[in-house]
Length: 356
Image (tube, rainbow, N blue to C red; front, top):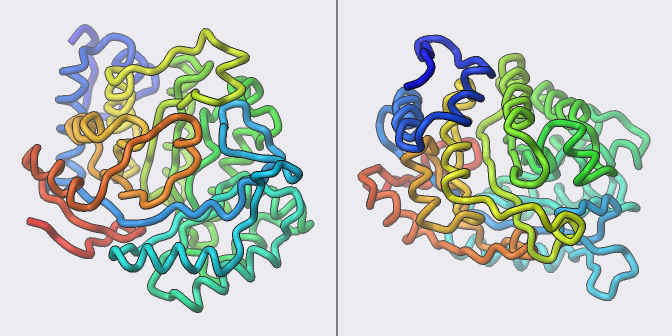
């Protein structure tokens, strides 16, 4: 390798940047696989059976990279009724699902009481279902709209049954990038504050990264650095998930036609570097939804130990052109195909069922 990196020590940002720019794809796969085996020596690859429920598509944030959101007066704007949500959960339970990922647009008028009623209704009616919901921007806006603190929002939702929060809305944790692709969205430090507060009150979360818009390699490493730094303090991130920008039907692609579709090579390179750099985040998910099932499978050889969700329903990236789908049996077969041991997990990465 062209640079003398001591892998017995924590990887520096400079060394990680060098690897991203210069190491061969094969070398990165070998290094990431070695790190993965240190963290997961039994060769178990997990997945979760869940459903995304987008309770509303109404949103005031107007992110240029999003094709899902609508404004209140649009003909196809909606807020799901509790009955509609119940029907979706019933369908999930029928296929052995254990988790719902709740996310919406950031509705301009909904306040904390509406969210409390929603979470309490689901938790009481379906106590066996884990509620993994409400991204940092949603939590932040609920606090501002309801004139309460982040801590109070999180404690009140936790008391009603919220288990954990997703990492959505991170995009790239650099304000120069955020100002270009989502100028109304909360800034980097506020995203980190929401997750810090969540971890403080015992609500775990995931960290995410959406790359492939206007960011540089250096800004990607800055993103990984702030995630690792917060994890050093709180230990509250259960997993890291990254995916490439899906540009179809988005305003960003109309404004920036120079943005190019990201290659599979790029995805695997970034994934491997993330596995090496995020030494304190045990789980890394493969984003087969945006990459396709076979690149999703290859990701397991470049550092990922989890295939993520069977994703019974997905509306956000599909609105931007991603059309991949996979069921439980297909996941099991993909995992076995590379010689690893498939297992169904819950939100907290506890093994529920083994298929080996």
